Image (cartoon, rainbow, N blue to C red):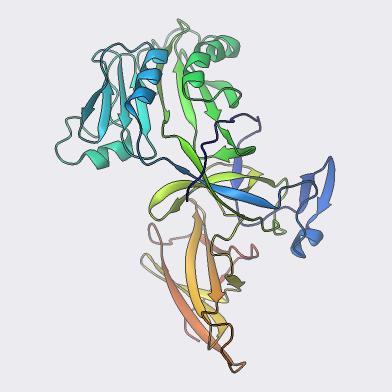
Length: 364
């Protein structure tokens, strides 16, 4: 995917979750939009017909690190160390050199490398595997500054990150520290999973923070699928998903709720058709999905989202040669997908329509 970087970031909303099940009542165009219409494949009123997949640029340039260091008040040269950019010794900024450019900052120097940067650095990296506590550098016995003061302290850093006008929230506190979060808006869409966090101490200065520094690059746009019919309040946005082993922002239906889960609202495969999943069988991290299919199509299974309580799977069919004469025979088939960990007590949902999938033996 290639394209232009999009720095437009802003739009405020409550915490959301991006899921396969769209809205029972979809908000759009100043009114209400019933899911029975969405089930027929009609997009929400005034909503976009297409949306882009957005990726992080492959490398983080040195000047971007220097700009962030300046906004944080970290002095010293930007130096390369294995897979990291480093600035400072007391107050310290660490940035992953490769996408997505995860960074951490600590005013008292106790911060550790971002998680993805540590893995890139390899065995020669000098830092231990650890993270600074959320209130590092601030005493616990004092009251935090007001939300307005915290937002003013965070503003120069957000500007250096290209996050002017981002979705900002400063309601969280822990001891004498107030946390400011900022979620970018990209291609006019809110995002989930690409958050910047800045912690402001009782003296009104930023004491620690974390986020991602790699430039966001717009990729190909895909037709938006209408949200299915098992949830309320769906909005189209961009949620972090792993694509080819690296995090990207994928068009997703965002719903009020606990953040951390995502479901694509587009089908990058283009011509692939969803196939209903009949049942599943779990064996360790392997999930065997059973469905009815034709003898001439190719079938692929994917895990499109996972959370503490649910796994969302999808089976799609594609026909390699549409001109081929094929008998209209259906047979019971299975396809295996691999989970991040054993299924345990999590519920399996078919991402194509939001149904809970019944457990079975995985055989026809």
